Length: 131
Image 1 (cartoon, one colour):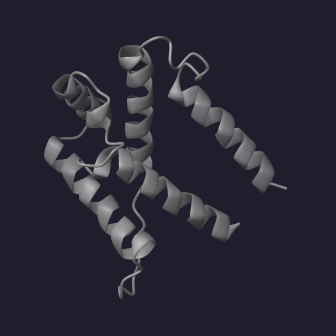
Image 2 (cartoon, one colour):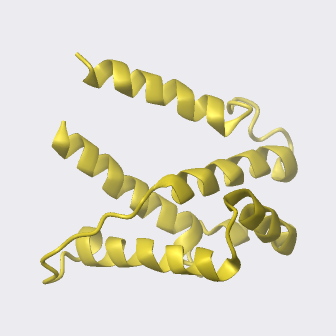
């Protein structure tokens, strides 16, 4: 179970960095959000943070990704990032995409709220690992 938890954390960091950590990346949120300024402002309000604090969080996630997931450098002490901001930011992006960026009903089969989607799979995971 420890290995599974660690693997899930690592994949979460990798995927989050695709969405928020690499501005030039193919999957960065700026590639799919039409009104980027309004999105960023609303995201920061939702996260109850400043742009500078969010940038520092992005850097923390990138350091963890680069030093311990992608390249396993010579660092001897690992400090896994706290995931609350990551979870909230992805949830906000998901809900925003469904509400504002959907064209031609492209998300027709997606759950309508990230919280419901997350809750469903969190319950499945707890059930699987509580045995």
